[in-house]
Image 1 (cartoon, rainbow, N blue to C red):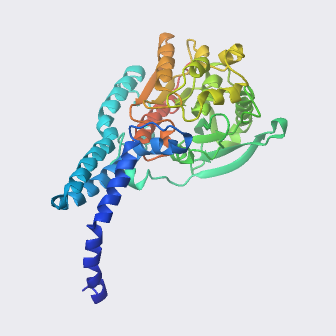
Image 2 (image 1 turned 135 degrees about the horizontal axis):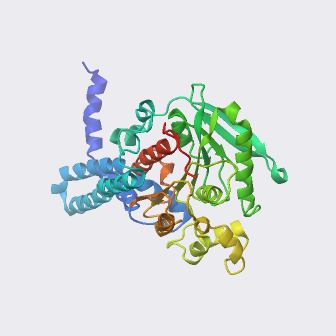
Image 3 (image 1 turned 30 degrees about the vertical axis):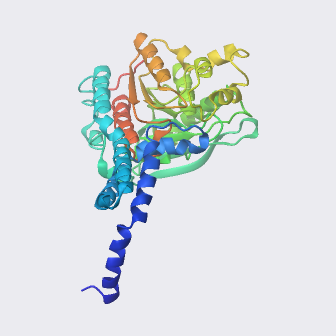
Length: 416
């Protein structure tokens, strides 16, 4: 039986839950957050809202539904509740938009993956590895509880170079079992100006549990250090990895380069031009690839001031440094027989616009290279910062399959 004090509290709690304050508060918060599903951020300060809102859409649906029900109970008390109900319905529709678009986006990507890699592209991947892959492109429970992460071995802050007195470090993520593993070398984003190997650590840990050695590397930052200093640092890291591969249980015949934003730009330049290590696959999350076009055609709104970022990275404008901009653009290195590329671009990206991803994809396909464009219509730049969001669940589902096909196939044949 309930204690007398607790019995007295129950009516108070019920009254509190249906009080006008709660319904008004939930309605206001839910509508404010839901609006960012479609509204682009005008400033960097607000950018996190535009990135995060689509990724918490299941939560928004729940909050909007509760607010709608609370206001429905009070609809007879005046026009204000009718207005609130209309706002609730509008916000609920906004929250549902990513989930409504999900099936069509997934179907288009699945069709493209099979067309490029083959209908049975995982057949040569050992059954034990296939069993570890995520079973569905979207798992609703994971959107609320998070994607489960198991324990892995982590070695942090390993110094691999000291250019100009700058200590460059890497993190190493490995499965708990001793073995020999394919490697994913990752480069963080941050407009070439910020970031460190700890960035996106959930991904690094997750892929380590999937049977990869993940090496997250650092590079020098602009504006103090300008291009091609960052590219030199990537090559130095690859040389260091090559030297220590045996100690780190890395299979040097099965290497993939992966980057996000600025890191994806460096990963593409390395894989498409010249790499110290043979690269079996490239994973590019929303990377800039045509810097001249990016400077001349910035997004609107332009929350980070793309032109200022490029001037800081390269030291001037395309008119002043045309050759350098050309050298720094991965799209200019497209040629036949490149490693297969997975291109992941958000449809609502207001930093690296999706049309640049489409152009890169078309150029790769025109030269006969294997490329897959994974376009996420509702997502913003850096969507995968919300690791369990719908966008990252979709991207992760196909990223791990793409990498399994490239790095774990038992009938391994070099691509080049």
